[in-house]
Length: 126
Image 1 (cartoon, rainbow, N blue to C red):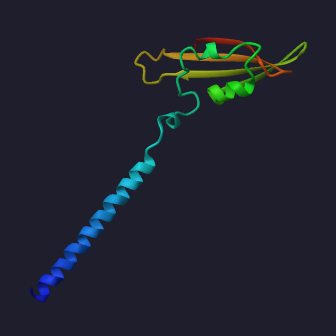
Image 2 (cartoon, one colour):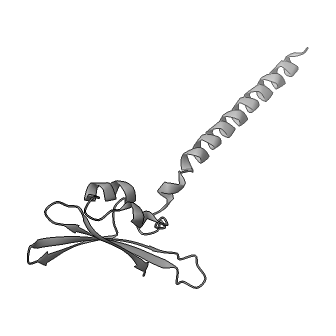
Image 3 (cartoon, rainbow, N blue to C red):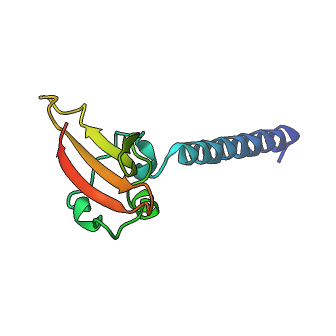
């Protein structure tokens, strides 16, 4: 084996290490970009699960329970009444990918101001 053959082996070995490191780094960067599907939605872009209103029970379910179940609402409204206030939370979803642009729904939940339990749950179209 001559000196030039040894030099060629070193260059080929270094090239292989560089190529492998580049490949591993690319895999790491691409996997860092991948996210769980639940985190790909912005507020108001996540569909309201079917039948979720049946899990929210009037006079039993609290605001904390609803936050755990549904997350942050799109809108919060506080309305003054004769006895105090009523808090209204609205969750909505509009499917912008739908060709007819009419697939939208909302879930409106009202809470008592004193005990912070659900008074009513209403699901309907937007």
